[in-house]
Amino acid sequence: MNSLIIIATFLISLAIGIVVGMTIRKKIAESKIESAEQEAKRVVDLAKVEAENMKKEEIFKAKEEIMNSRKELDQEIKERRSEVQKQESRMIQKEENLDRRSENLEKKERDLDKEYQSLENQKEEVNKVYEKQVEELQKIASLSKDEAREYLLNEMDKEITTEKAKLIRELNQKAKEDANKNAKEIISYAVQKCAADHTSETTVSIVSLPSDEMKGRIIGREGRNIKALETLTGIDLIIDDTPEAVILSGFDPLRREVARIALEKLIDDGRIHPAKIEEMVEKAKEELNTIIKEEGERAALETGVNNLHPDIIRLLGKLKYRTSYGQNVLSHSIEVSNLARIMAEELGLDAKRARRAGLLHDIGKALDHDMEGTHVQIGVDILKKYKENPLIINAVEAHHGDVEPQTLEAVLVQAADAISASRPGARRETLEAYIKRLEKLEEIADSFEGVDKSYAVQAGREIRLVVKPEKISDAQMVVMARDVAKRVEDEMEYPGQIKVNVIRETRAIDYAK
Image (tube, rainbow, N blue to C red; front, side, top):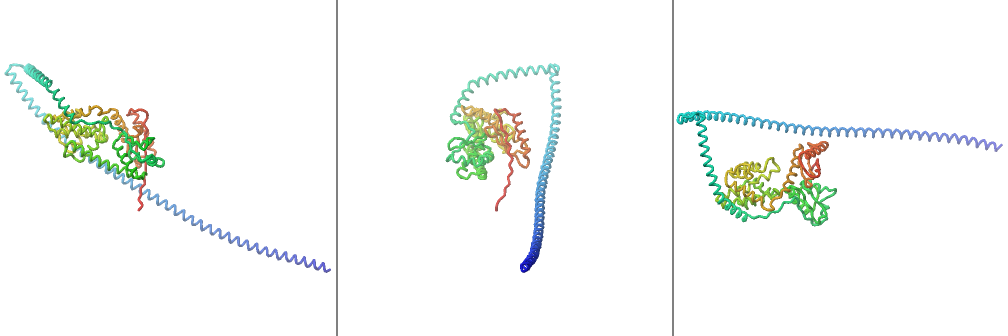
């Protein structure tokens, strides 16, 4: 009985425990569910806030991009308007020039009409006088018009022929007796007093290095330094196994001299990078300009030529870096000046005029690679511009026989030029032909629109064109390279092949303040 009670009590207690446990578990589960729901609500609210922030950020970025695009568009419109205004200004200027030319032509036409009418009137008067004289002659000689004309012509022809033959015999006899002897004596004396050494001009310069380690610094990382120097000067830098030396190769002596001066300055400074290279190239150009001026003044002082315009002195200085068939043109001009002066003194002529004309006779060669026309015509135009003596201008224009010499001094300049050029070793044909070929290359390149600079390098095996980025696009570069190559093929003769290298560069510069 007691055991039954115990069992019953245990079962009741067990049932109560189970009920209580289930109740507690239910409450715990409900509490967890409520907590989970609150957490889920919090996550959803946080996600809504982040989404709203992201939306605002994207809207801000879009607005900023729209503002930037609008600024760029406004800038482009402004630039295009400026270009259109410039074009309009140029067109207006051209129209004004055409109007002035038209007025000048009309004025010249009126003057020609007046001159023509005056000549017609004079012609009528001459015909009347002629007819009157013919009538008088017919009356006197009782001859017809045709008979009188034939008689007069025959008599005049006989008289002129006789006098001409007599004069020719006298002149030939005198020339044979005196000319050869006197000419040889004068020329020999002038040449002896004006003897000069001649060396062939080269197309390379050598720059000494303190050590071979400097070669790597000149080349720079990925060749940036050497590319910058070659691009800025148009001269090839040859860095080979030659110990402690760099070779500068290029046909233009002015560019080669700029490259040499700039490279020596860079070596002395020790800091070699593209920005420094650009700075030193500009300084080298300034220094070269000073040297050119000094050389022009030295030439004028050496020959005793005074009162030259400063621009003419600068052009004389440029002749130091110009060659003709391998002969230095400035040395040649000084020699011609001295030879002409000496021969003029021996002949009792104007020595000052002779030496001035001799010094200036090749002045056009300082610009004949930049301007169209022969060096004679360019030189004449320069001297006319600076109001040089007309007799000096005639001597310059006549020194190659383009016009007749008006003075004996002009004839002496011709002779002195021939003497100086004919000295043994003074000239070399191959160099002149080589330079002409390189100049032709650059001329073809410069004829294309959008080309800023052009350089013939690699001994004429490559032509580099630096184009204006605002005018030539990347796609147009390809077309230009092909067009230039085609022009070179059609207009030039050359051994091997010529590389056409078109370079387009855009720079953005700002300053930290």
